[in-house]
Image 1: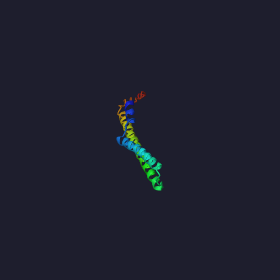
Image 2: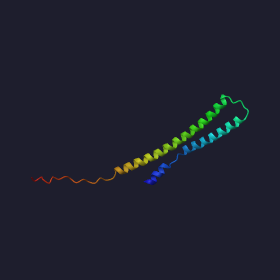
Image 3: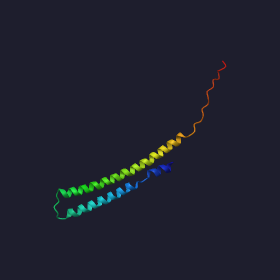
Image 4: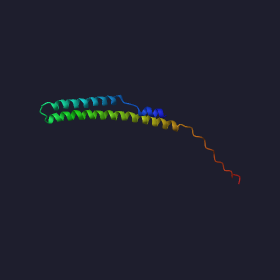
Length: 107
């Protein structure tokens, strides 16, 4: 049973992993892009900061979506394991109870 629990906890969603990788790539590109443009003598108005902020926030939110997908898959695996163990525990045969007999019936 411990092996099944460890396996359920280590379950990874491929879509979640993809979202996290794309998010990391987006954050790195945003940092590189903003560093290059910030060092140049370009007019840094509100549009520059808006583009950088939007790119950074969208990358971070994509990473959060990947974390949600991973946690959802782990929760689903652990819930399935819980249901399976509950069902198997309810199928254990119950020992028959002894019938009560009144020993003082004759009196």
